[in-house]
Amino acid sequence: MTLPFSQRFLALAKERSPLCVGIDPSAEALKGWGLPDDAAGLRAFCQCLVETCAPLVASVKPQSAFFERHGPAGLEVLRQTVEAATAHGALVIVDAKRGDIGSTAVAYGETFLGPRSPFRGDAMTLSAYLGLGSLAPIFEIARREGAGVFVVIRSSNPEGSELQRARLPDGRSVAECLADEITESNAAASSDELGCIGAVLGATQGAEADELAERLPHSLLLVPGIGAQGATIADVRRDFARHYGRVVPSISRGIARAGPAAADLKRAVERYIAEIRSTA
Picture 1 (cartoon, rainbow, N blue to C red):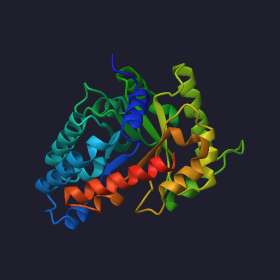
Picture 2 (cartoon, helix red, strand yellow; picture 1 turned 90 degrees about the vertical axis):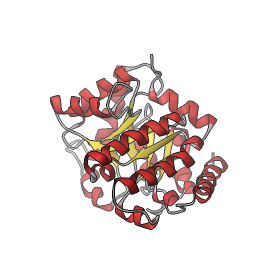
Picture 3 (cartoon, rainbow, N blue to C red; picture 1 turned 45 degrees about the vertical axis):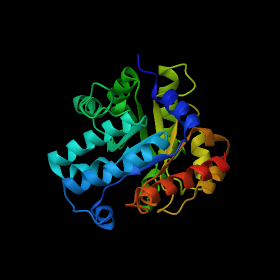
């Protein structure tokens, strides 16, 4: 039986680092490394990042869209990237941000989550725009497979603020409502300290991050927005405060831009790991 994702993550975070290295092979990133914008360039970019970074961290996070844009060949590189990262002992969070209802939700979960799925992800990101209840089939698959999910609650992009901070009739924001529903779902499904449903909380939210984390006591917190989007590890430590032990700090461009030399990538990862340890 596969241990729950949260347990596997916390063990690796203690052994290595909680740092999550984002793998975002955009056209701009490939060009920056002097690689062609095709499946071969995609493969070279991902192979270098995985071989250099995966042995040092608890998880990596490939952004599915940058693979999908290359069609079937790109999706095969995604599969290979997950396989390679797993071979180096890292957990893989597939950043797909899927969300739908009924049988479609089931199909998304069966596509990305667990060792029996085509992409064999340890976790995936989800969007709850159709309501958190619509994601219940994916939550069920995650629990069955010992996988994790991270639902976008409060993102770093400014375009998300108006919707995510909109107020419901009971006075709660949309983000607060989703956080409360996640907590209820985790508590109802498991007596473990951490449930399978985590949350995505952007690193640039300041005091709001702590308030939302307080509503999510049974969740891992995937925190992007560090590095290129302006937040620092010190900011995350300050803003998440007593919840910092549940944070999965995610950095993509801030690491990739150190490449393509493997030695430079390794130094960038080790620098962030040192910062995380110094603020622990």
